[in-house]
Length: 153
Image (cartoon, rainbow, N blue to C red; front, side, top):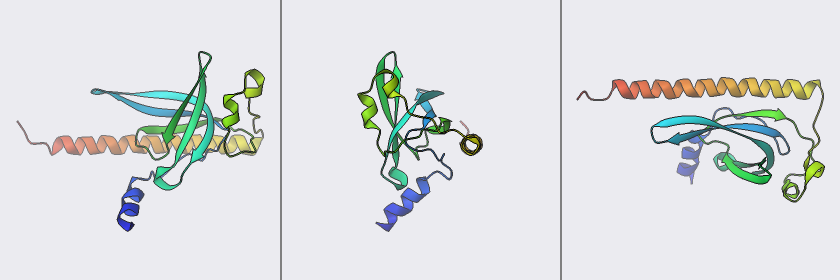
């Protein structure tokens, strides 16, 4: 069991955005299609958080052309570039599954307002941006080192 825990600790991200259930977030997710890579932005409300440690996941729900779409993201996935908080939600539940059945105004979640909240969101987004840049630099350095060590043909 200690070996598994050690491997999982290596895979943890050093920094993750501190968002919670009810927040509206933008998830910048890396899509790899063949040899090309692109970043897709998925914006929606966080319905739930599950598990803990490296297996921690969060579910994001959005409306796309009148149809509700949900997607589950692992928090420590290397494909997640960053998670940006758009709005902080004011909720009193841990799981917002009831939003699936709501229509129109009933689907809205109240927003947390105030200077402390907006300062916290700005700080989290700035830290997420810095962590994303550091992760990209590490990947570039790794690819460059791999390219330099490759045998000549």
